[in-house]
Image 1: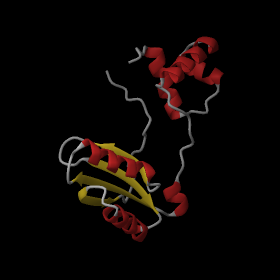
Image 2: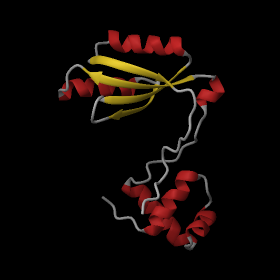
Image 3: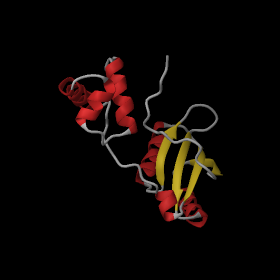
Length: 156
């Protein structure tokens, strides 16, 4: 685990908000000169803290698609069964996020589909594919209240 100081955290907060910020503007926002700021960014990238840079897309709004949250419980909890399920989720383009969870369910999925019919066909294909799903619960997202997937929390 890499040790982060207040400058590293400040850099991460700014980059999470604006990954296209210029070197000079980033340095200005974290109150360092350009060279040390950029050296810190390079170290954060090399250490894997910064995994990459990407555009935030609005596929749901652009394509009028459906956003769905799915809770999944597996029938069995062997390493093989969990690996089979996780590989299926990696391969499914409809699944934009998949979390293994502790507690009442095994996985929580964030699915984006063209419409509810397409979603149901997707779920049916998972069930037919016998990847170990015992039960699932579907929640249709009606409104996104907050979405900041890569933001850095401000803990005290």
